[in-house]
Amino acid sequence: MHQALCTPQDALKAYATSAAARNPREREADVFRQANAMLRHGEKAGGAARVRALADNARLWTAVINLLQDPENALPVPLRAAIVSVGLAVQRESRREAPDFAFLLAVNENVAAGLASA
Image (cartoon, rainbow, N blue to C red):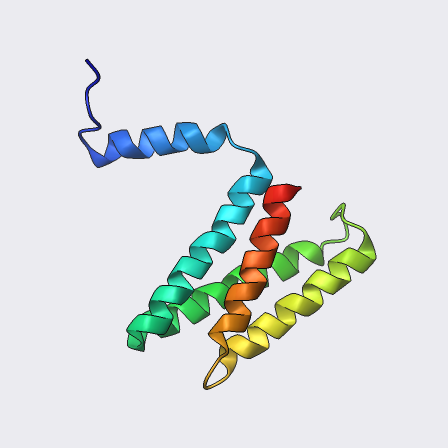
């Protein structure tokens, strides 16, 4: 008989084990999926949840842009430039008084899908 996970530490160990076995691109896609979950929640809840979701999504894209601007990044320069342009558009949209959540969600979904299929 299997024993259920009893503690948060047990659950964390199980997740870490399963995550380690997954493709790195799939784990990267999960980051964008998580950002979208937060955006959806923030859009519905409003207030601090909305501000937090937009800020976290902008930080995600800041990290992506920084990684793409690294001269040692192995992606082709035209592809890196195109993704940076998308990231800058996401950041601009995130700062608007009334951001287009559908746009932000669509961009993240497309990136997650691209990473998962790579």
